[in-house]
Image 1 (cartoon, rainbow, N blue to C red):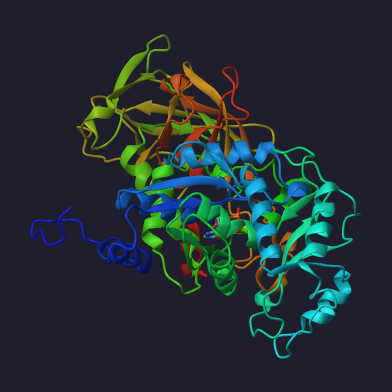
Image 2: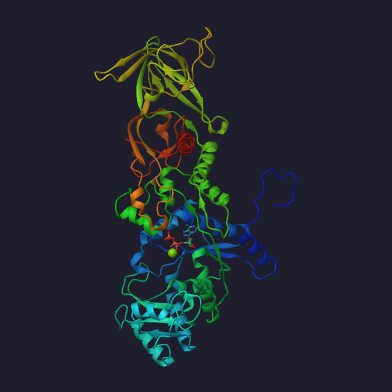
Length: 565
Ligand code: ATP
Ligand code: MG
């Protein structure tokens, strides 16, 4: 890549602060090869916020010729499980990234971490503390008042070693005691006031079973795991900024094989969206959604099922950039990124969502013609579709009115409309049921209007889509809207369950799609002309009953509503 190429057409995005740090480290020889990691806790499915972290960690490794590990931060056995591990691996790969070597687990390092805890004790830098949680809170002090030393702080090394061994051996009940680093109870940073580094827990761990009765804290495990893996740039979100002094202190007091550095960036927040595994889990557990991969969920698996292409998520993450300033990104940016990728790549097709029968009275009843339509308006490589055409068709109920003014560019009694990729027709009669609903339109084909205007000069009002009633694919279509009606559903401790959008899912049965869609495959995306971008639902679609999800409409209907209000 050349930075100063005058012929370069694509604007070069200015480097963000992490790129600058890494470039400088490489130039100054502080770092030989960049090693980053993505460190999820397997306590839920990944969401769009994690995509930002994944893209950042993997792209830094890629850009600077380094590697990126996938490490499960699995120190909390009660909340973690294998299902989450598997989904996270799948999601990272789906997003387009491959981690370096084997998948890693903090639990692989439990023995080493234990030995380092012993080392801290031997150096007089850790002690077993018997304060109850309530007492510990009192001793900890506040943001404005220093803490008070624990009465157990000055135990001998021998006694601490003995007690810590007994903790490991399961001699004590949960909560009986903890191991704490001996740092500084008067530190202005509460994280430095003798933080807990090991707790007793009798929970089965997804990897280590019941081998361990004690588990390291996040703070004790994270930096040391980074050091074991030779991570050079340990990139995390801003809430860990205040933990950095502890991260550094531990590395400085242990015989670790490498000296990683932690850098923080602002987490991704998106309006109308929740980015917290805990809250997303609540939606799943309370059956407000159809599992973690419900297409309305901001999880990677939900977005995949809905039909968001991974490239769109990567583009979105590149677009929003990396800073240290907290902000809320407009969800329409994400939607724009999805449309942008799909518009370029999705083959076109026609599907009538709310079918209304049209009978062409002057077209031979037994004739079937084949119309040709491009797969894509500009992408010749996407080939051609063949559309059967007969006297019996479906159009959308919204595309017919008995009467309408000139603004209505669709079919009206006595007026003409072009059927996309086919003839112009004129409506003669509306047939109604007993309730007065139009159930069929009788119309005429205007001769010689394939690809040309009518000879009599009477033009069509507009173009509508249609599907042959004799040969089509009967399918279900699911339309999605935002899951929350409140732009900030969980701000300031608000109960996000109160702003669930009751209209976030609309299921349409007996939709009629053009027959070429019978060969649609999972992971293929289509633009249903005039309706949006769709893909098959990987959970419910079957050969007998295809189900299409609308990933996104053709334009931002919310922006339109907001403008006209
Ligand atoms: P959650 O609160 O949703 O559980 P978490 O931070 O606890 O998120 P982890 O599994 O620990 O989830 O996260 C793995 C990595 O992803 C961490 O480095 C974390 O900083 C990052 N991450 C999590 N949420 C976001 C977000 N909204 N934006 C950017 N990065 C995030
Ligand atoms: Mg976490």
